[in-house]
Image 1 (cartoon, rainbow, N blue to C red):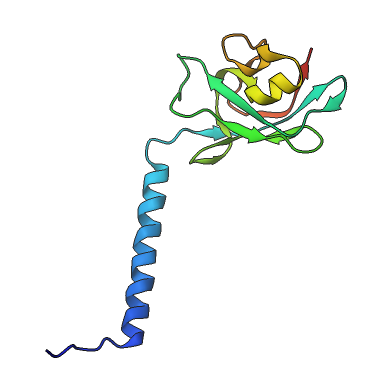
Image 2 (image 1 turned 60 degrees about the horizontal axis):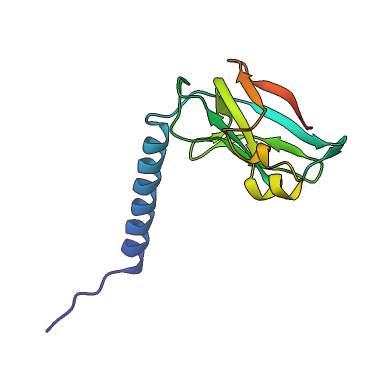
Amino acid sequence: MHFRSIQPTRVRSLGIFALGALFAILIGCAGKDGPTLVPVHGKVLNNGKGVTAGSIYFHPDADAEYTKDKPSSMLQIDGSFTLKTFPFGEGIAAGNYTVTLAPELAQRLKKPDYGAPSSSPWKITVPPDGIPELVLNVK
């Protein structure tokens, strides 16, 4: 049996081509059926101090423009957050939302109502231009 050797340059070229094709496919898929995102930045406070070591979730109402994903963010050390909608990136579709904390964070704060969409007191309307400074207070 005789095997034909492939030159390293050709292998490298094929690899670059394959990566380029994969990148083009991913970009095409991400733009398909994706929502128009607007920025939402904010802070979660409890007794005037930033809530940290957890996540925040925005659950779209049933009549929202885009309901396939729920935007979320990790809370930073000062309680601040920047919402992202996976896999589309930073931002959120305009519309009405119920906001929750991660259930384990709500339990730790001894505020379990904030961990479930059915009981969370936070109802937010995100306008078409977004929200630059949303402050959510745990009461």
